Image (tube, rainbow, N blue to C red):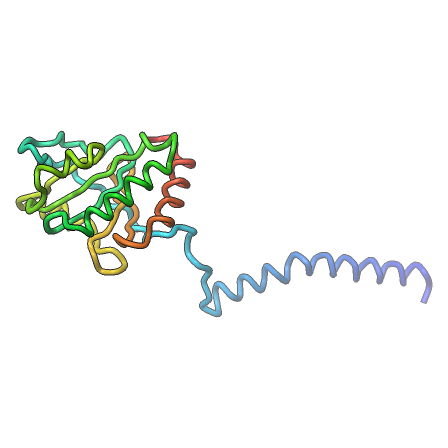
Length: 198
């Protein structure tokens, strides 16, 4: 064997080794994804992604003083919506307090986020807006209101939860009413950082 053919053979081996560093992981990933049924965890969000997002209709929603909110009230900002189907009880007040702390934790981005309590007409006593001055209390009543509330799916724990609505009025994520504050804050911070709207 002459030195030239030995060098050529050695060069070919090195080329195959370098090529295998690229192609072997690619082939393994393709096999795992397409043939073994394994899928990576979807997304990095902590809440339940509503896919596709649900466009909330711009209907008139009731205000605690008996008036009616503007039809596009859930547009233009990010909204943290807590849905209740009864009067705002102790648990409801605890959720609202948690959402208030979460909004304050957003610091300079806090004005981009509005807390909303959405009820079915059986809520709320007149003291609630005074106790929660930055809270928007909206009543969805009648057949339009029932259809509107039906767009909010039950949270992962089966309860009425907390929902993120984007500035275009799209219902996009849901969270259980309790125990989700840390994940909700992280998701909201990421959304606000990546978004220039609202």
